[in-house]
Image 1 (cartoon, helix red, strand yellow):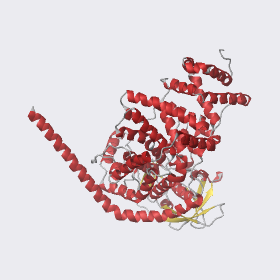
Image 2: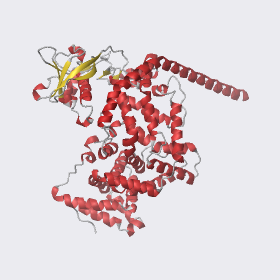
Image 3: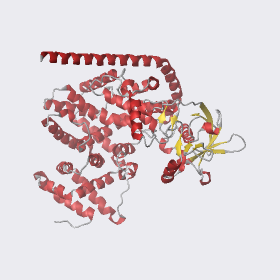
Image 4: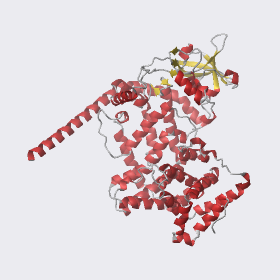
Length: 630
């Protein structure tokens, strides 16, 4: 028996020693690869800084395109909903007959007064959360409606949030798993916290963290677009994401074309493009350059403009697909500047599309159904054509091969990822510093809520620092910053291309890794983002620890100071929000679970005393145009 135990210990020791040796070997190889691309990174970074200087001047001239408060909150709260930008909270359009509008609005104002009764609101939330069909998605949406409906009284909203948090904390402490609290948004209060942070950090984003985030976004976009991007596969030569990496080496030549914009009355504008760019990609780069001082929402869409080339006396309209497109059986190649033989220094004319100019066979102008038919009849490709036409039948085997290929990233691909990472490093560092520095500009909400968590940990005798670290991480960095980092269009008036989004996801994952205390040992199976930032992650982790420590040492924010700050936000922005629409949408939940809510109110002595059930019945009668039971 002793021999077996000794042998087991020896095997375990040997295995751990082997893992340690492999970790050191991989670390050494990564350092060697980084060293090999260092000079290239320096040159690329210098080039990027020079090229971005114009953009920086544009930023100072036109300002960072930060969205107004209403659009920002609409996007953060409601854009991820199932209806997206068609959501009634974003459109603000309520389908109410004009003859009933005044009655409905009066009843909704009474409903607002009812929501401002703490006893009613707590009962309302508890009743909904007790319904089995009240899904996680519904909880998220309900909490966002509540945030808008109560925006005029953010002090009250914060009080409700605190009350619900104390209940939630009690549940986790009793269940002896406090670390799990705030891990997801499975309760109304967790989503209320996300929205509260979004509200309280808007000004900080605008004044402090916005600029480094915007410059990081622009630097990634600029770097990605310097190399080929496959318009069909959405893969790029320059990226941080191995799954979005254009594996094949595509030959290309950078060109500068001179663009005349009709009806603008300005001189020809030089625009940098690639000869392998599709016509839509060229249009997008031209629009980006020509209208760069305007917010993205005011730019013309690529499909609404025509690009014309006049090599001689004749004019030629350039399209992604036309009668000259290269065909091979069922395959059709998207046209590029190289296809049309457009050379460096060529003059192109950009004009708004008239009906007579619409290309007969243009992919980007087709409605959905015809587009799908075209895809089926003529499979299109841009830079890399799938090698096997029958790969659909082999999709399972193909996906397994793809997984294996992704797992074992070849040295040349990792080198390319490291090169892009090195070029963008300063922009990444600047953003991390802007959100993880405990300076006097830190929003009072951060200090206030972190102190609240510390107080509760002390009250429940939670001595484990890991638990408090996880709470703070889940309440701010992962709940707010990661969301903004992955979705810059939530705060800026910008369009985020898929190839830029995939690189932002890698940086967001690195930010998430920096916030965990768990050490990740590198192996050959480690995801590429962990390999890419292996050298920096310990520095980032220390930044997070120092940030939490720094916040703890800051001067306390009193309830009175916090309430004053919240009242200022309410005063400044409530009028711009669709409060009435939010109340109308909230009432739908009252209607759906009417009997359950009435029963809960009638069973609560405090609610009975205030006749809350009766008040709700009166509101229901007005809103639903029916006679009450009373």
